[in-house]
Length: 144
Image (spheres, rainbow, N blue to C red):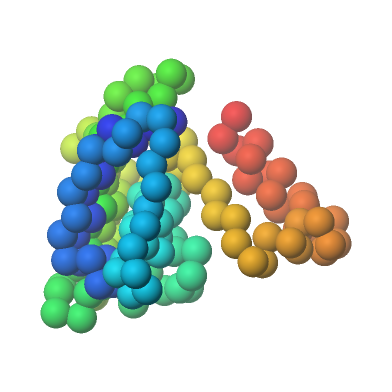
């Protein structure tokens, strides 16, 4: 899967970000508090409708805003090119769209934008019990 365009609006401290990522490698750099993690959270939202940091995606809406929107054009060999979007408003309404069509389930996005977060709690996969590993394998098999 490759993001060929990404637009983020009102996610945490990111008012509006629009980029055309390099198809091979991208580095996300900046000082503390500049939005690096918020940028990664936006990709996570686009993938599965959840943040890897906050349990309630509604809390990711920038303080002055009524909703956040994450939009991307993605490409995969399996599905080709698709336009994918995810939004949530302060009332808690969630919208997931693929090629302009509203999806009944946010999980439809995961097929086109599979992502996984590896952070300090990921050591649980190695040192934790089998349920942690099974959960990771189940998630991975969902995308095969």
